[in-house]
Image (cartoon, rainbow, N blue to C red; front, side, top):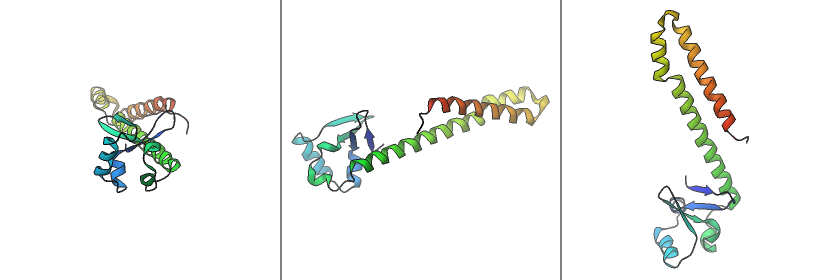
Amino acid sequence: MKIYVDHIRRVWLSYEYLKDFGISIKTINHWKERNIGKRIYIDCRAFIDYDTIPEPTRKLLPNKACLRLDSKLYNREKRQEELFNELNEAYNSIAVAKWSNEDSRKGCTCLRSVRKHKVYSGYTYHRRQLPFT
């Protein structure tokens, strides 16, 4: 996560993101020495408030609307990937394989049925958790 948007819709940029746009560590350290910019730390990463970045440097960066959109798209992709991994794990879980081995009389149709049920129940659970976007 290189861009963070808080509940007040303030945009916070990580130092890594600033470096990607050609802003040197030396410049960032000068801001820190002169107490320029608000900072927060999330998961041992430093983020600086977009509005507190000096104007000449801010001109090198995309505007706030683009940054908010990038953050939203990143969060959506991350959530979709997590959901896919959870459903994939439910489909291929050890519990399903163990259960199917214990009840091998019914064969692979039973295994297919259990897998579909686990994935469907996982999907409906996550569908209730996701906000409508």
